[in-house]
Structures are given as structure tokens and as C-alpha cells.
Length: 409
Image 1: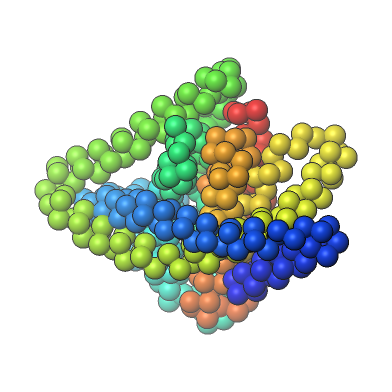
Image 2: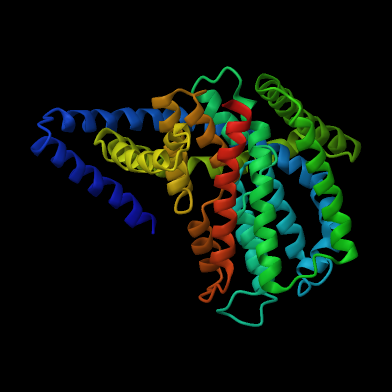
């Protein structure tokens, strides 16, 4: 899948460049494309330096949370809910702890770190699966919730914005939180319909209703604020939450007599190992996206979407942020490349860049997750997983666009 997508970028760029040269008389198009190749290779290394630090930092803190028992406590708190949503998983099964850790990593925006934990969780769920080739209900629910990208603290998005010079990297905190909540809710409801889960069960309602009331009340409060106040509140809450999570992990770790420094270093080493494997993928995708943009092919595709949006009488400012949404279902590295490229060409705090950042934080690489997670355990029949995951993905994109108009337009 990634092989075809990456090769397709270059082939489309080559066709577009030839058309511009032979039809449009633009002889400098090839020079622009070659210049873009080297510029994007340089940018990859610059982004990677900060990514090393971010993954190392947050996996260090996540290890403290794990050793302090926070993850185990979350598994116990969520146990009654999982018992209703995943009735085939026995209480106390190791899969529940791994699922909780995976959600914790995703919640912190550490998608690269969440993947190896998620693979362990999927293998653990496969041990309970009566079929070796057909996805179980629990595996489908776990995958769709992953594909819905529940991101409570998108630190990697903050990192990309900081690397591109954003004065306030956390400004997209609330938009991402609202959009990712929408995608997760749609993902959960779609699976519940397909699997006939009893969401009206008193225990399930005891978890869902307080969260829904809190989110609804919060959105009602946000509706009373101006755009400037919304952006300011998003920044304050983003920074406060970020530092608050760090202090929570450290204080609980210290109270539980965890050697927090040693635990941090242990987790940071894992983060370093995860990060160092990402550079080749980042270089490959950024270069391909750079060539696509320099050839004019990307702009041509966006022009088509822009004309369709104009014909419908809608505002077109969000269109420049759509490249991230178009490739996100297939490749996380391609979507990151599109996001970075949008921030570079449009400006880090431009409306399209804010839309792209919100989409990046509230959607997931659906087809990649399906291929990797199910492929790791030999699942061939995925049943309703694809439809539910894509529905959650679409909900996240639409919500991201609407929320950005609410906050930033």
C-alpha cells in the first residue's frame, strides 16, 4: 500500500511536470522539483531532531506512569466498561492493560509509540479469538477506537508547530480535543450498532453520560466566547494540561516510591529506539510530497476541489489543508509530510495550516492500522472494521473543519 502511494506521488509529479514543460512551456519546472528534493531532505533532518526529543521525553514520562501503577489503575477503572464493550475478554486479562496503555499513548499524541503497544494488545486479543483468520468483536472495537484517534494531548502536533516557528504551538489544543471526541463517538456508535452492544446498559451509561454532559456543557461555555477568547483559552488549557500531566506522573511516582529518574531514563531509551527508525520514512514521504507540490500536481487537484466547493457556495479557505486529510487514511508519515509542507507554504498559523494540524490530530491512518494490526495476527476477514473506521475518519475530518471555522475564521 505505502509502496504504491509513494511511487504514485512521483509518477503523478512526473506527468504533471512534463505537461507543464511541453504544453505550458515552463522549462524551469524540473529545476524546481530537484531543488524541492534537497530542501525536503534537509527539512526531514531538522524535524527529526525535535521528534527525537519529543518521543524520548514522553515515553520517559509514560514509563514513570506505568511503574507508578497509573496505567494499572486506569485498567481497573475502565474494567467494568470493557466488560460490557468487550464481553469475550475475561476480567483482569493482560489485553486490558495493554489496551489501556495503547489508549494512554494515543491520548498523549504518541502515535509512533502507541503502535508497538497496540500490536501486543492485538496479539493478546488473538489468544481469545476462536478463529485464526476472522476478526473478533473485541479486536474490531479496539481497532476502530484506534482509528478514531482519541487524542487528549497532541504533543507531536505541538512539536511540529513549534519546529515551524509557531509563537503558540498549543493553540490547536481545544479544536483537536473537540474533533477527536467527535470521531471517537462516531466510531464507538458505529461498532455498537454493528455488534449490537448494549450502550444503554447502566454501567456503560455511568461512563458515557458524565463525559457527554461534561463535553456538552464545555461546548456550551465555549459558544459564549469570541474567536480571540477561544484561541487564548485553547493556549492556556493546552499548556496547563501539558505541564499538569507531567507533574501528576512525577508526584504519584514519588509517592509510590518509584525511582522516577531511573524510570524516566528507561522509558526514554525506548523512545530513542522508536524515534531513530522514523527518519527514513520521514525523508521518503517529505521528498515525495515536495516533488508533488513543486510539479504543480497538488495545486491542480486542490483547484478541482476548490471549484466544487465554490460551486456549492461554500468558503474555500479550508481546501489548502485537505492534502493531510486525503493521505491520512493511507500513511501517517505522508500525512505528517503534508502537514509540515502546508505549514511551510501557507504559514504555520495560517487557516489552512491550522485545519491541517487539527485533522492530523483527530484522524488516524485507517488502512495502515488495518494492515499492520490485523496482519500481525494473520486476520484476513475484517468484517465491519473498515466501514466503521472510515466513518470515524470522515467524522473527524468534517468536525476538524467546522471547529477550525468556529475557533479561527
